Amino acid sequence: QVQLVESGGGVVQPGRSLRLSCSASGFTFSSYGMHWVRQAPGKGLEWVAVIWPDGSDKYHADSVKGRFTISRDNSKNTLYLQMNSLRVEDTALYYCARGYTSGSYPFAYWGQGTLVTVSS
Amino acid sequence: DVVMTQSPLSLPVTLGQPASISCRSSQSLLHTDGNTYLNWFQQRPGQSPRRLIYMVSNRDSGVPDRFSGSGSGTDFTLKISRVEAEDVGVYYCMQGTHWPPWTFGQGTKVEIK
Image 1 (cartoon, chains in turn yellow, orange):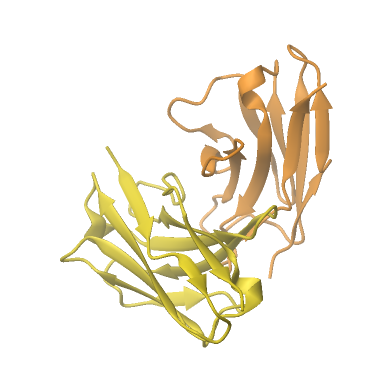
Image 2 (tube, chains in turn orange, brown):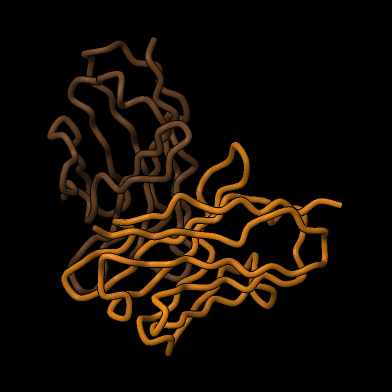
C-alpha cells in the first residue's frame, strides 16, 4: 500500500536551516509528481511546493520562494524540502502528498506530517 | 492566485441530518482541457487530510456514498446526506486548475450539536 513518511522536523532558531525528508513506498515513486503542504498550528492548509517526476521542473509558493527548495532522489524514493532562512511564521506541520501521474490525480495520499517549530 | 472561499466556516449539525458546505472560487475552475479540478478533503481531529472528492464529483475509493460533490464554474458544494459521528472534522476545498499555486479554502469545521 502507498506510504509516505516524513521526517526531519524539529525546533530551530529563526534564520537557521532544516531539511525535511519524505520516504515513499508502495508505488513507483519516479512516475509521480510530489508536493509539500503545510499547516500552521490551528490553521488551514497551505500548498508549499511541487516537483515533477523526474525533477525537471519545480514550483514554490511565493511565501517560501528563494528560501525553500524542493528536490527528490528517485533512486532512494525520497522527497526533500530544504528550508533556509527560517522564520517564526514557517512554524507548521509539513506534509508530503503524492502528485500527478497519467490516470491518477494528485493529493490522494498524504503522510502523517513532521512538525517544524521556529523559535528563539 | 485563485482565492477559494468556503461557507459556513462552522457547521453544527444533528446526527442523521444533512449538511452542506459551499466553496466559491475567484475565477472559473474549468480548465482548457475540459475538466474542472476541484477537490474536497476531510481532516479529522489529529489526522492528516484525506481526499474525499476529486474533479468536482468523483468519490475516492472507500468514501461513503453519503458524501457527494457538485458544481461548476466558480460554485461548488459538498453534501453529506446524513451526518454520522465519524464525519466530525474540518473540510477543505482545493483548486488544481490554475497552478501554481494550488489553493485551499479556509476550511469548514463540522461538529455535532
